[in-house]
Image 1 (cartoon, rainbow, N blue to C red):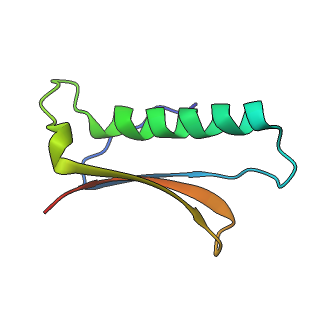
Image 2: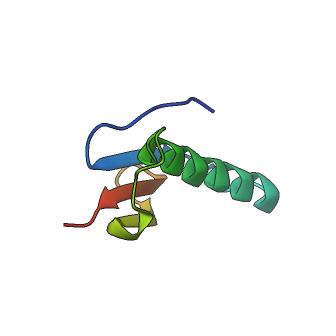
Length: 74
């Protein structure tokens, strides 16, 4: 899993899962995606207020991948 940091208000990670992915492998991949997005959204100083954010996980048919996003609520 690649580490990355966010400076913008939106962090996104795409998780591509083949149609016949075993349940355990799919759960692990999605959990790693959520963890990576939250890790990027929370600053090292720990000053990010999680109550101001929106975490979404949806399947995007255009790119055929699960899209996990963190957006700062406005």
